[in-house]
Image (cartoon, rainbow, N blue to C red; front, top):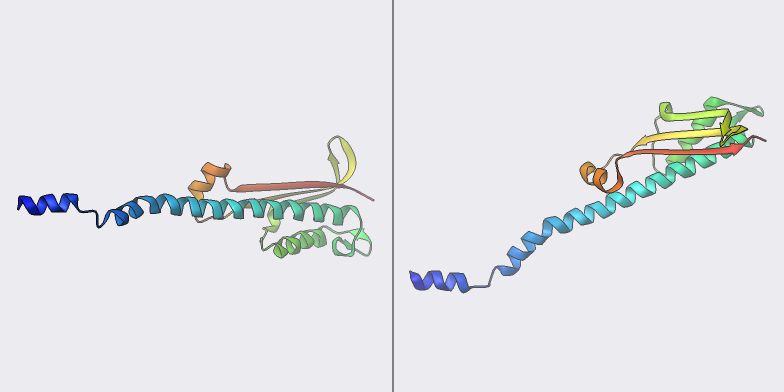
Length: 145
């Protein structure tokens, strides 16, 4: 019996499997963290680009944001939604704030856009630790023409 226990203790057959089992959770956590952080960063960029495009659409009268050459809130909101959908980000229209006569950095006569978005992730606790949360905000101003 002692001989069998001694052989069992000296055996190295399953060492790789044990090492892999110890490293796998950390590796998967890092892998999913990198993927989710990249998605978070990409979504944040998409929101900012949407805010800029919408502010420009409001400031420079464009067909997409106006009705018969006059600024239209409903069309501008629809433009923001369609622009974000082009980035595969679906916005809640109630979280899009548009102001056609706003003050930006102490100057008046600007079109302002503010967007809030709740980022959905598979690993929310990890994103909270790495990125400071999943609530994203984007804003932009553009001078009215």
